[in-house]
Each structure stands twice: as C-alpha cells, then as structure tokens.
Length: 350
Ligand SMILES: NC(=O)c1ccc[n+]([C@@H]2O[C@H](COP(=O)([O-])OP(=O)(O)OC[C@H]3O[C@@H](n4cnc5c(N)ncnc54)[C@H](O)[C@@H]3O)[C@@H](O)[C@H]2O)c1
Picture (cartoon, helix red, strand yellow):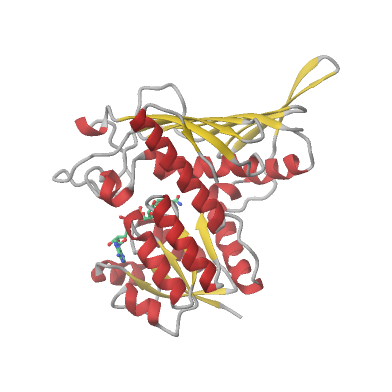
C-alpha cells in the first residue's frame, strides 16, 4: 500500500519534503497546497506533482489524502495540525511542534483523541553520527551520561530578515525555537530522555535589530521587522542529576564552525559529534583514547526521517520524535524565554 501524502506549505522546507517523499516506494506525493496558490502551482509543476489543491482546507477535507506534511510558519502549526488530525489525517509536523507550549498542548490533545500518527520533523536524529552514537549509548558504552554541552553558534546566518522568521508573533522566537529546538531534541534523545527539573537562560538581540548577521535562508523583507533574539544560552538541570549546557545563535562574533557540536560526557566514555563526524573518548590503560567514528551508510537523514514516518503510519508504531517529546521541547524553550525575561531559574514541574 502507498501512503498518499499532501504537502501543505510550498516554501523551502515543503519543497524539500515533497522531493524526499517522492523517493519512497511506499508513498506518493498526491498533492500540494499553499496559502499563496501560485506558489503551490509553481512548486508542484517543478516537482512533477499533478494535483494542486486550492487551499489547505480543501486538501485536509479530501478523501484522496491519507497524511499531510505541514511546512508552514510556526504560528499556523497548531491550527492546521489540529484540523488535519480531526479530519482523520496522519501528520508530519515541522518543528517546533507549537509556537509555544500552550499551542503544543492543544495539538497533543487533538492527537490523543484522533488515534492518528503525529510526528515532529527532527531530522538530526537520523544523521549518521547521532544514529551510531545512540546505539553505542544504548549498549552502555558511555555509562551514565551526566553532562552534555550542545552548541550551534552560527556567525552570520539570520534567515528571512523581516519575514515571519524574525517576527515573534509568527515564529515564537529566533534561533532558539528555530535551530535550537533541533539541538535540544537531539541532546535529550541521546541523554535517554531525562526529565528536566529546572531551566536558566538568557537571550540577546545584538545583530538582528541592526540588520547585521544576515544569511541566505528564506526571503528577506527589508520593510519587515526583527523582534526576536539572535543568541540564546541555557542551563538545564535534570531530575536524575544530569545537566545540559546549551547555546545557539543565528549571528554572533564567535570562532566556531557554522554547525552543531554536541559533547556528551559519561562515566565510562564520552563523545563529540557534529553533523558529519564523530569521535569517541575514553581512558584505557592509563591513557586518553580517541576513536574516530566512520560513516555506516550513505543515507540522507531526511530520507530516513520520511521513511520512518511512513513506516509508523503503515505499521501503527509510535514515531521517534513523538507528540510527547515535541511538547516537552516546547516547554523547555518557553522556560528559557521565561527565565531570560525574569532573570530567574524556572522550575519545570510535570
Ligand atoms: N526541519 C528543518 O530543518 C527545517 C528547515 C527550515 C524550516 N523548517 C520549518 O518549516 C516551516 C516552514 O519554514 P520554511 O523555511 O519552509 O518557510 P517558507 O516561508 O519558505 O515557507 C512557508 C510557506 O507556507 C505558506 N503558508 C503560510 N501560512 C500558510 C497557511 N496558513 N496555510 C498554507 N500555507 C501557508 C507560505 O505561503 C509559504 O509558501 C517552519 O515551521 C520552520 O520552522 C524546518
């Protein structure tokens, strides 16, 4: 059986999803929709998708669609995901799950009532260093992980200045809710999904308001505005005693490469991973040992993510980045913003 997938949002990520799902044998991209119809028509023509729906509403109501992929600005995630779940569609929802935790909670409620699959698109879980490391961690090779440092400090990469990306009302925040949520999701997953106890954070906006630090993703709108952060840092303590130190920027004067860097420290070993490399650390015979990880297969992480989504739908399995983890990620992001505003630590509770 082939899963009939409809793509809602014909922008940058919607087009990537469409091209990726087209590569699967057990899925067919059965339509495209966008609030801006000509965009959907253009993208569909370029990608060889026959059916263009007049609107997201029309696609969601259609019997020709089994599952929708939502690649729309964060503000619209909740409304469209809830509408689709209530109409009996499975949903692959772009990150963040909600524009905030309250929106994510509403999505989760609709998801529980629907009995359909809801997955959040965190492709970093499928990059090869993360896949390999997760397996090693599950085999106990790192022992108990008690400290993780996670960074994604971009130097000059503000996306879509003035567009929905940099408007709080449409995005819910800057790099923290944009790339930071990917990094947070991966860190927690590799740590074994610990329960966060408290969060301290600070956010800054020293480039965006001055139209500095501009990058290539998205379309800039110089008549728009920038009212989000461009750097965020946080310290998250877990109930089991582990800690996560975390920072992310769209723009900052720093000496890092423009990519994610995750360092995990455990009682028996450690690991440093990037998007396309990984090193394992240990002490053996009174010596430091560093072992470079080697790629296992040349598989695109987005293709693996799409395959996983289709498998979960067809086999009724719980997807890896689930609604529950999406909601928790949103709660932590909210707590970082809250802590930055209040200048105080935020207790997480349940
Ligand atoms: N997983 C990733 O690596 C990744 C990368 C980029 C973006 N994203 C996420 O994908 C989403 C979209 O980002 P993008 O870069 O593709 O943005 P984009 O601006 O390029 O595209 C968004 C599209 O959604 C359409 N749209 C807006 N509101 C709509 C509505 N109510 N109904 C239907 N269509 C609507 C717009 O017309 C536009 O074509 C965001 O949530 C973003 O966080 C994820």
